[in-house]
Image 1 (tube, rainbow, N blue to C red):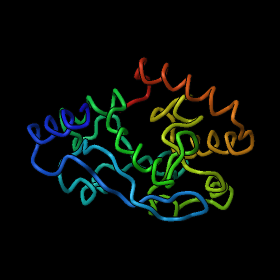
Image 2 (cartoon, rainbow, N blue to C red):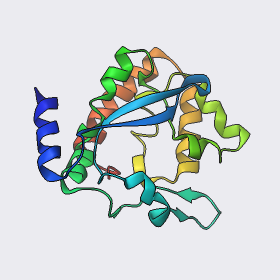
Image 3 (cartoon, rainbow, N blue to C red):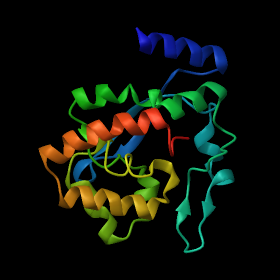
Image 4 (cartoon, rainbow, N blue to C red):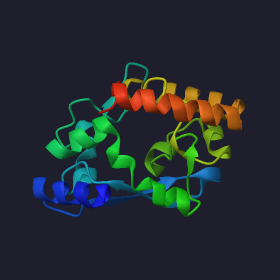
Length: 177
């Protein structure tokens, strides 16, 4: 019911499909199609080079706060994390877990140093240690360190703790854009 309402609002706000499918890298480097509600204009991926920035240490900053490709409804969906709801289907299909490092874009994984690839030894998740400790406020190389903390401390207790902490992160909207 909520998914249908979100889909209608997305379609009323901007042309294009409400559901967005994107290839991501999952556990053990396996590629899969991740689902999200569309938060950007159609064709946004072709415009990514116009908004990507390189940080002082040469790291890629690919998610700017004021990304002009994000729609009005998309901004709301991102701040409330409602754009992630379709990923529950990825969880049901066994492509993702509720908790774990976020699935990554293949072109970003190509830039990874060998130590960063260790984040793929566990199932990729809907939420994770990085999401409850900074989200988009942290550059990619720092969220990889958070992902590796999770990998090294992987346990049911940590998953439960992260799920509860996710509620606080979603309500506070800190780092969500």
